[in-house]
Image (cartoon, rainbow, N blue to C red; front, side, top):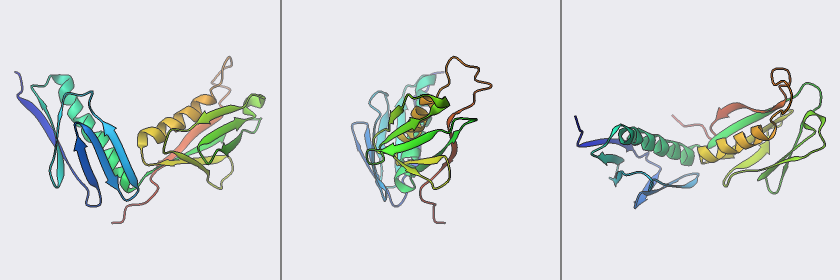
Length: 188
């Protein structure tokens, strides 16, 4: 049976403002502004004072699935502009201590002495993501409002320390995500 439409709505938190212009959603909150385009999806985004309605007309199965995907993206954006995202990363090594340097105004990361190699691995973080030392030994943290940029920056750092041409069951050295939290806690 063909459905006429599939729809869902997401409530707008009190301290956030939403603007929708031709499927480009801009969300402004206490921590800043996030913008995301949904132009690649055939959907209708309707803004009301308290919620955003996501509707797809005459959908197939994939279009119905897109409704929940858009809802999840909007929820991640609301959390980002309210609380922010923080990923902690730890360097793990067996013999050669990995040195991590943060350069260029906390937007670039250099990994030195990985498996004793002289090659310096440089990672450019995604826009809006900053890197800091946590104060603990061999630990850094990535902070930002956009969960996609923060997690992608963490993935770029982890992938830069991939062990090649060795048994990865034995050589477990690298920089790995150890904790995923928020920058600000929600006041209840």
